[in-house]
Length: 121
Image 1 (cartoon, rainbow, N blue to C red):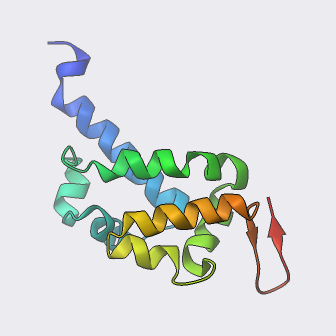
Image 2 (cartoon, rainbow, N blue to C red):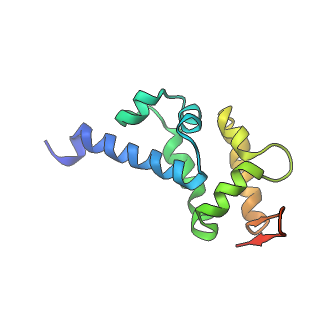
């Protein structure tokens, strides 16, 4: 049995992806579980094979993460732009709205307003 067929390797990869999403957006474990529609035990065991959203969300955030970095994304997900906050869309699993928010962030040039002025990346 090769590495590709080893379920432990697959679980580890899924756990790493989940941790990456959590880190990128500054999500709590509860928020991550709600976004992926899993319970904490499933998350901890890495049995996320059914979660097709996880790789899609990471792909969607790839450019934003490269251009803006996790600190900007962590602030953006809680502040957002016009309409509701991106975290709100994630928590109700409205991935189309979240995708629109990511596209809006990229279109605006990774600018976050508020507090001490604008942060541009």
